[in-house]
Every structure is written in C-alpha cells, then in structure tokens.
Length: 86
Image (tube, rainbow, N blue to C red; front, side, top):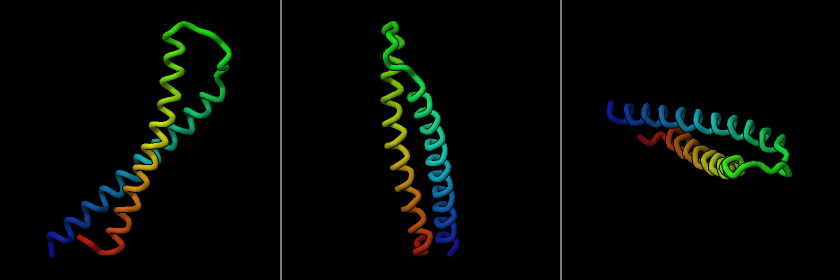
C-alpha cells in the first residue's frame, strides 16, 4: 500500500510541476506577444537585430507548443489521480 501512496504522491508532484510550467510559459508568452505587437516591423536594422526578431517569432511558437504539451501532461496526471491509479 505504501508503494501506491508513494506513486500517487509522485503523480501529484508531477501535476504541480506541469501546472507551474504551463502557467510560467503562458505568462512569458503574453509578455512576448505584447513585445512583438509593439515592435515596428518596418524598421530596418542590422542583421543581428533582424535575427533577434526572427528568433522572437520562433520563440512564440515554442511557447505555444510547450504550453499545449504541459497542459496535456496536467490533464494526464489529473486523470491518473482521479482514477486512483498508483
């Protein structure tokens, strides 16, 4: 019985971690979207500036993908805890 309780505790810890990461990434994404909206894309700059803008656009997709992954992990561990598995 102790092993099941321990696994359930681990599920809870993982659930809390994935919830935290989803929330943190969502907050970062919101700030990034505000930044991207505030940047005037018609301004030309040196190559490293243009690369930074491209990198920020890529980061937006990374955050969106990460959030979906973390949210699916949250759902998985919520279901495992509700089902009483472990």
